Structures are given as C-alpha cells and as structure tokens.
Amino acid sequence: MLSSSFTLSKDACQEKDEQLSSSFSLTLNSPSKINLFFRILSKRPDGYHEIASLYQAIALYDQITFSSSDAQSFSCSDPSLSTDDSNLCVKAFKLFQKKTALTPSISIHLDKKVPMQAGLGGGSANAATVLYGLNKLMGQPLSIAELSTLSAELGSDVPFFFSKGTAFCRGRGENLTDVNFTPQIGNITIVKPKQGLSTPLVYKACDPSSFPSRDPLASLALFQQGSYEFYNDLEIPSFLLLPSLKELKGLLESAGFTTVLMCGSGTAFFCLGDADLPSLHDCFVQRMQTAGRSEMGWYE
Ligand code: C5P
Image 1 (cartoon, helix red, strand yellow):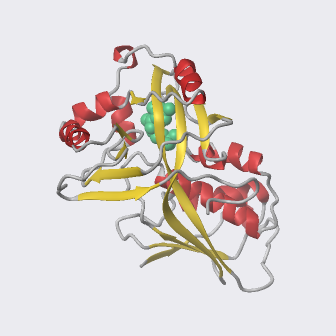
Image 2 (cartoon, helix red, strand yellow):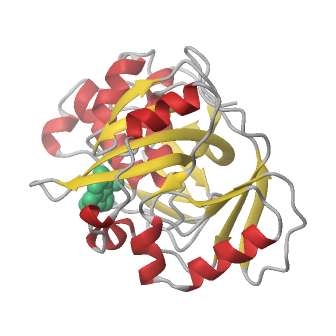
C-alpha cells in the first residue's frame, strides 16, 4: 500500500486548526458514470470543448475511507496510481482546506476498483467523494451546491457527482441541470479492454465539425418521453486512435446486446440488454445498475 503525507502551505497552516474530538472511521462509495448521449458541439478558445451530454451515475464503486489520524495522509490500494499532489483526492483535500480554512487531521485511503482511462469518471468521483466526506466530518460548513461549484476547479466531470445521479451537463461538463426522470435501462454491463485512452488525447483528435449534427435538446426530450437515443461523438476520434475498440464494439453487438456505447472518452463500453458474453481477452467485465444520491446523503 502506498502512503504519502502532505502538508498545507505555511499561510494555510496559520488558519484555524480544527481537530476532530474522537477517533472515527467513515467509508463512502465513490461511484462512476456513463454518458447516455454525448455531443461535442465546438472547440472553445480556452482549449476545452463545448459539450451537451446526459450523464448517468452507475453502481460501479471505489471505496474511500476517512480515518482520524495524527497527520494528514493519503494512500491507495493501486500502486500504479500516484499518491502525490497530482492525485485528485489530494487536490480535493487541499481545495477543501483552502476554501474552509479548516485543517482536518484525517487520513484518506482509496480502495480502487473502477478501471482508469476508461471514460467512467472514476477519478472525478474520487475528488467529489473526498469533498463530500470531509465536509460531512467537519460539520457541513459547505452546502451541496457550494461543494458542486467548488468541485468544478478540480475537473469538468466532478460537479456531476453532486447531482441526484442523472443530469444534463453542458459547458465543459460542469454546467449541470438535474433532470426529473431516471432512465429505465435495466442491467448495465461494463466492458473495458486492457488498453486505455487519455482524455486530452481523445479531445485533441476530435473535429467537432465532422460529427452528425444531432440536437442534444431533442435527444433530452426523447429521453424524457422514455424513447432512448444513445450516441457518443467521441467514439469517432477514439476508434481512430485505437482501432481495436471498433472491433470490440462489433463483437459485443453481435453477442446480442441491444446497445453498446463507449463511455465518455473511452475505452470502456456500456452494454444494455442481456447477452451471453463472448470470450473477451484481458477485459474488465462487470454488471451493475444505475446509481443515485439521496437528498443529503451520498451513494449507497
Ligand atoms: O476538466 P478535465 O481536467 O477533466 O479535462 C481534462 C482534459 O480534457 C482537458 O485538459 C481538455 O484537454 C479535455 N477536455 C476538453 N473539453 C471538455 C472536457 C475536457 O477538451 N469539455
């Protein structure tokens, strides 16, 4: 198990030093997401892309444990994941301290199960879960709305995890509208090949003018009516970067799934319907359902 300690800057250390009175341990699920439709509309002057997407949380979870400790620390079950300041959990911890001027004596452990470089938003959910957990343990100095706004500083997908679990996301992804329906999509099978793709690389390879000109508001209206249209513009650049993805999609479709769509920037696919899985070499495969967040709580 990797473990690293981190400390605040001198200025921040002069802020209120908040110690929790008794020993405790809190474990929270850190979910993941799929995109039921995903439009890339344009490239923005700031380098990001303007998107419009229906995000859905799914019950594929990491676990994050917060424990009372003499010193702040972060550790992770996966040795391939860096535990230094570049880790989104550490960034979230530091951002919480900066925003609240609290210095919680808490150690955080991440038990990583959600595949990385998959387009499942696992790292973004980790950041959201750390913000939520610290806020809960420190007596809720911030509201869910404030946590959501703050979390956009950590990444475009992070605010989504403060929604109820289904949200229409625009802007670079951080501008979200809760929707008043839960898509009835049944069992979801996630299939992720060994190879991953980096999100910036996929966005760099995409040409928004080449994508079919679907209207995302019309897609949203269809979902509201229970008539589902699944698509992901990012399949085009991702399949160009990694042609084996197209083959994997074809294999899963011919196995009998009714829908097979890439998650975010890939390389995982979500499959709907029931099918006998073909033999898949070196793939992560897991079956689950959608997930949601209760009014004031987290994902259970
Ligand atoms: O916001 P986040 O840090 O997760 O984004 C990672 C990278 O993905 C960005 O630096 C950018 O290259 C790309 N991106 C984008 N348009 C978006 C979201 C992400 O181009 N809407």
